[in-house]
Amino acid sequence: MSRELLSSKIVVEEEEPRVRGIPSVPTSVAGAVGLAERGPIGQAVLCTSFEEYQATFGGFTPDSDLALAAMGFFEQGGSHLWAVRTVHYEDASDSESHTATRAAAALTTGGGPTPAAVRGTLRPPFTLGDGQHLEVSANGAEAVDIVFSGTAASVSAGRPGPYTLTAGQSLRVRVDAGRDVFIPFLEESFGDIAQATAQEVAAVLNAGLVGGRALVEDGVLRIASDTQGAASRLEVGDEVAGDVFGFPGGPQVGSGNVQSLRAVELAEVRALVEAAVAGVRVAPSSLGALQLLTQSTGPGASLRVQGDAASGLGLDAMLHTGDASGDIDVLLLEAKDAGAYANRIEVEVRPATNGAPDTFDVLVLEDGAYRESFPNLSSARGDARYVESVLNDERTGSTYVRAFMVQPDAIPDEQTVALAGGADGLVGLDDTDFIGSEAGRSGLLRARRSAGPLPSPGARARHARRPQRHGALLRGGARRPRLRHPRFARGLQRHGHRLLRLAGGRPRRPL
Image (cartoon, rainbow, N blue to C red; front, side):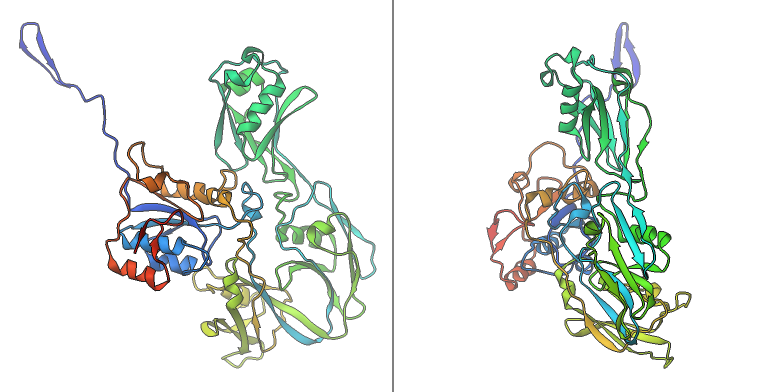
């Protein structure tokens, strides 16, 4: 600001304008949610070209318009697309509850004695309860008891009700790895907001909490995470938390020998069982389910699993014994991504290219065509060509499968196996699976966080205001989609499409 004295008692003052313009949102960046042939589920992946999209999420499928939306976006001049693959979730707030499954198969070897094995029927993650236990008895020895434990992080109010609240006050709560949630206290939510009861406060908190709950026990207000286990976190902060309710400051942490009882991973079961029971190992089966095996082999090997946790892990309570000879799993192969596409994948084992008797070649086929070749692999863990390390390498490994050694140092026979059991998880699909959840970090909410903030209020195209179904596309600005490239229209017509749609919704215009 400048001040210039022009004449007596006359001063000119220059000021910045009080009303500033709102910068426009670039329309070349978008977030899309929908069904895809393959790719990670519930994760936002940045694609800068349609070829890059296809490399991660595959091509066109009868069930999804996401690939068409991606192709149209880049044909129309888009440069950055955050794509999220979605499927049906049994619980939208739990990212591990999706119903898509990975295809799997096992490379085997035969002729020798086999271990006793208890093979499960369920794939991880598993849902267990606090205090549930597993009794494992190997080779006639006394059963060993393994207990699964997990408690939720929680905080209790240090002051009893009633509480003196003021309309407009809010309580900040963060549950697990989620965001801060500010829950407002409004006058209409209470009979008397200046004399709010613990039950009234709990009802208001439960209406706004994601991944947690408020309850009243013996007249004391308590907030707890829904996660039971070492991954459970809860933090209640700000002046209202301390001054009004007397909640303790700082994050509270859950406890247990697993991260979350509602999502117990196979690696956690392996760590607990193998640490407690001598002579027993845990490994995934050829279909990705849990299985327990004895280190010893032959008819003298026996294994029995009992306890109330057995059903949650998909294990039976029968006595299992080894055999004098038979096929045993050597290497478990699992599709990189969940989905029915992987049922078209085969894996072939050949004699090693270098002729060494303790190595072998692995080739990967898709739709009968050879896609990958990994020569001279070894089953020895310390070897530079160890099969797990080579196939699972992030840069140079397989883009189709990942491998897990089940029988250390064993060499698989020459064979060709087909992966099976993959499913797209589309049964029961509804709008909730596309919208997603803050707690589950999935769906549209995942794409929104990755693509950036939504456009500022103002004129928006009609398609941006309509509810989206069977896919969704977030895009800044008010520009309508136009077919600037005839090649895009011809591409749609080749795939049998006569109407243009952007990631679902109602038809827009005939081609």
